Length: 110
Image (cartoon, one colour):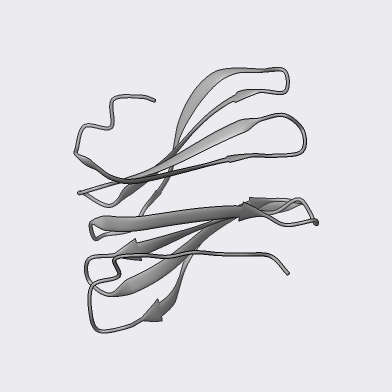
């Protein structure tokens, strides 16, 4: 992983069917980053989003349509989604505001 410049407060990983290891991290300053390697890719780090609040929980899934979805639970009570792939450009949007700190998130494609 790259030097995030702030405390990493949440981390998750996924290996996709193309053999790529994706590690997603969230920081105390609200930055969500991806580090990936494998499947013909060299080790790469990228900042994917700045969500404006400390990220306390992070989870991710790649759906069959090729879209990577990363969900972040925020200290300010928000849940954001950052997604890209499958013909979609990188987008971050607010999914919910719960009114209290989001400590744990999970996701499953069914």
